[in-house]
Length: 151
Image 1 (spheres, helix red, strand yellow):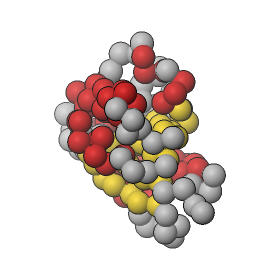
Image 2 (tube, one colour):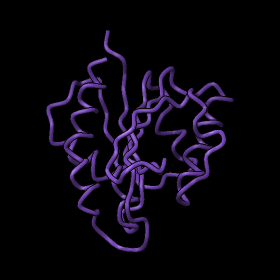
Image 3 (cartoon, helix red, strand yellow):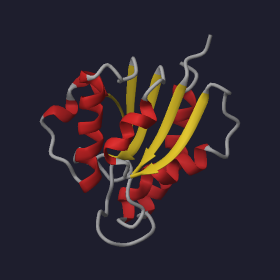
Image 4 (tube, helix red, strand yellow):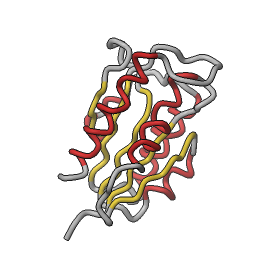
């Protein structure tokens, strides 16, 4: 039996590269996906993220993640790695998303597997559209997601 999986795009599309997670899942939706996969363009859900992830075996969050790499770098991280325990948030919604995951963990609502697909932003300021480096990362991120959905 296949894992019930959610892919959730996070980010603020009015803050340039910060909206990359939403744009990646929009492209993912154009692909033929297995029936056990649900895709959400969540934007900045805050604590509502707990309701979105509840009941899934695996959740993949797609978001801009600033780890000081070159713009457009794609990261595959596990929430369990503790990476976000000491990192500084780069946007208003990131605190809420990580806080929501921590609350879900402590209340027993965190799925068994939580993967974060992060794309290094170049521009995080008021403005629509992505920088060329981040835009170029979208097809690669979609390919990574399709591979991730096979596991």
